[in-house]
Length: 197
Image (cartoon, rainbow, N blue to C red; front, side):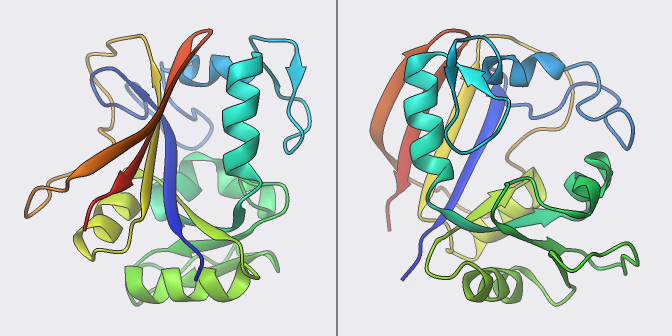
């Protein structure tokens, strides 16, 4: 069965955006969280235009190649200007989890309003045997609460933002992780964990 993974750029103090994120403003004042996509000379084999350091390219492309579908929350969808009618991944379909309707949906996007389990089920069907990637703190938290996450990958940026949206929201209990790999790279440290059940 495909795995459910979450991989996100995050500050040392745990934020995935800066202050004042939103539609047309993206990450707010934290655009540096994605500088590592462009700070090297190794082109990504999955994402056109990304030129990463060699260690980052190895980690990033190995993870990105696994993903067949992505589940994103409504805030992420809105802040990213609806991904231009596509997906945050060049080949993966997008499932948007929201309690509100979203009339802007394209043929590459699916809206699920009935909860995280249904969203991940729909994403697994769309993934064609690939893994399901999660985007956004709310979606990740709900999937962790439901026991549906297999791996957590933090692309940790060496900055304390001091504000912004936290990656992880309140959880009802501890979630134990086992470190699989730690890869230091230019402007980022890649921390790959599996969820211990």
